[in-house]
Amino acid sequence: SQLLLNLPFLLLLLMIATVGFPQLRHQANFMDRYRRGMVELLNSDLTTRKEYSADVGQQKHEYAGTNKGPGLKIGNDYVLVKFIEKKS
Image 1 (cartoon, one colour):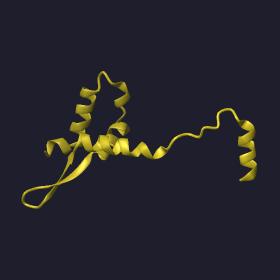
Image 2 (image 1 turned 90 degrees about the horizontal axis):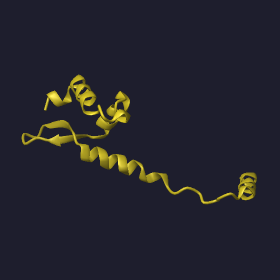
Image 3 (image 1 turned 120 degrees about the vertical axis):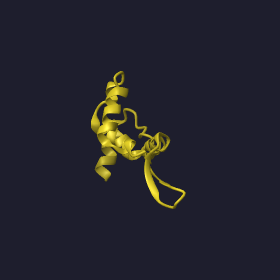
Image 4 (image 1 turned 180 degrees about the vertical axis):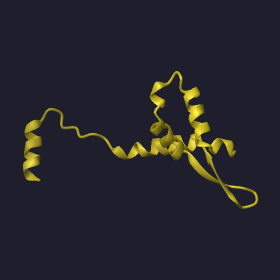
């Protein structure tokens, strides 16, 4: 558990695991994923520990993508766009 929280060790694992996935090699991307997946768990002696959970990280990532909403459907009606811009 303590070994998994060691950042240099995690970066080494990242470099080994992402040989075929160059889009995941950037350290900032990895740290974002790592930060997003950290959870605090309760031990039986009522102390807490932090661990990484890929499932929680994925859920947070998917939830963050839901608040974007659909795009506007104005098509090529540039006259309408200019009219709305002048009104506001």
